[in-house]
Length: 343
Image 1 (cartoon, rainbow, N blue to C red):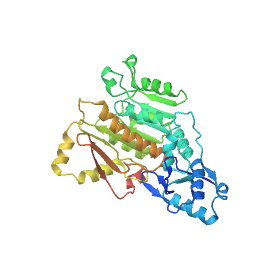
Image 2 (tube, rainbow, N blue to C red):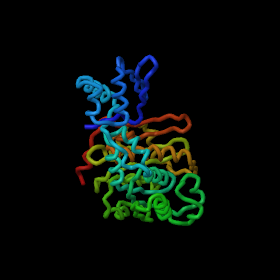
Image 3 (tube, helix red, strand yellow):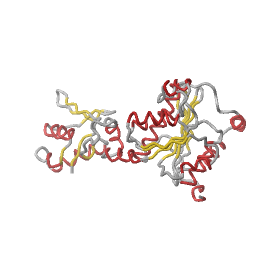
Image 4 (cartoon, rainbow, N blue to C red):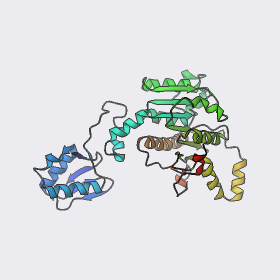
């Protein structure tokens, strides 16, 4: 079997023959011989175990590989199958989450993502997902492109003013890759019945990137329960933006149960005021929209590729733009609610 050092690690040999593997931290290989250094150089490029036999005996090979594996520095010997592709550099990032990142990239390419709302949040998320190599999208939005959208919805341009956003978004996608499948629905989601446009599609993830109607989360939660579709959403205010919780059938609570527990932890006055305010605001700032949308896009990509490393899993993440501070409301016991069994 072949192995290689992870791409990010650097091999440094000092004049006094001290040997370091440089990652986020320094790992000193004490007593590393010249043969050991040569073995590391071969592993840096990737090699079969047979290629180390002339350098190290069996015990030395086993100890070296064990040390590297324990420190997360060893992978199977893979080659980048996406050279000269839009995702060529992403493959090396995905190496952090699997022994062969080509497999993870293939999962992304096979995924279908539905996005409700391709405005300030949805447009930025869409940019990242297209860049990540996802090949199938379902876009829902009844709005048209307006001039004031252009400060934060960067997939649109002045030539598209007055065009339906879903049509303009489809144009953007196909400018990058004409082979990406895009289904568009210029409808307003105001009930579970209005989501019937999705009934004929197999969906791997549903994203709520719209800010109205006020009960949209409830609508998507009911539809998610009915069809057992994972989903997540985000919202951006003037000084604070949030994303999550990430809802996964039979693994997490549904959104309604999450809300109930979150509300129980609130001060009564805080809860009463929050229930009575209109969440919509006139202000919209490109950088803050982009920050929250990008955080969510990262969770989406990692979920689709790895089913792991999701910062918003059963967690509402909140970012305070004034203090550059992250807050989280997390339900520690990761277990599904009974609602999934009722559908």
